[in-house]
Length: 84
Image (cartoon, rainbow, N blue to C red; front, side, top):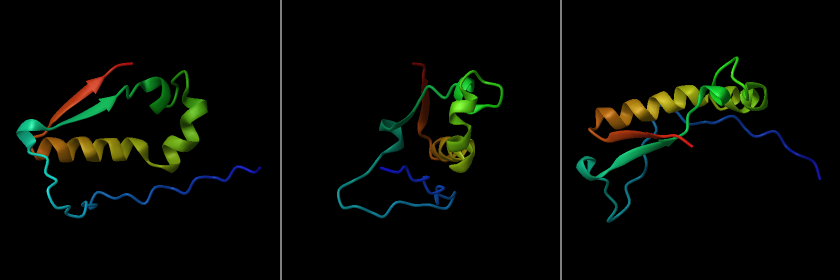
């Protein structure tokens, strides 16, 4: 069995989900929960950086985290950070 290299993310800052009947997320009752975005795995020099570097860079994880956090805040959605 061979392992394939994952394709880079095609997500962009302009992505909008399609409308689904009956689905809504009122900002006053919605929160974005970001689980354990630790420097050890997400930044150069972190203890686990060499293990995660390829995936973090290929999928532009930092930029996507910033984008989704900024978008949530711009819509009045509370952003929570949960440590592991």
